[in-house]
Length: 169
Image (spheres, rainbow, N blue to C red):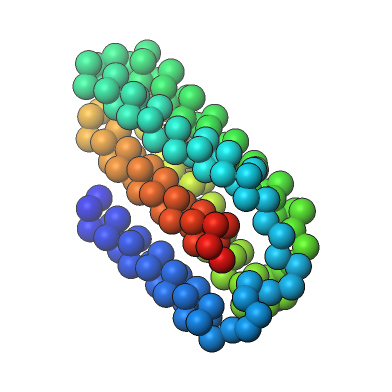
């Protein structure tokens, strides 16, 4: 998992490098029609960060071999992650710019889109983990640990994305 997450750091690092390169060489920045709802994005950033805490509680339940607690906290995490994705879809539908509008638009959709795919991947991993553990009736500590590392990574990346795209474009 550590090696895979390292490759993900390089992937998102490349996206951020492209963003800062374009930002340094494009005037005006961010471009016409860019009016992002920073407050709403901030609320859903808090929702996603909260999901790291609920997944941590799921992992703590796993340490106690508490399958019911693991299930409860993972389902709450799934709901928080789904709310984040729903907000992203809503946000995209209301934007006044497209990917082809300007360089900022290209990188905005690329970075938030890839991050959204990673969130969906994390939600799928949580669902699979829950299905397998509920069917077996056993807690698999390595599975919850791997999913938790991945989810925390996705959350940290979003905090960076939020700051770069919404706070300091």
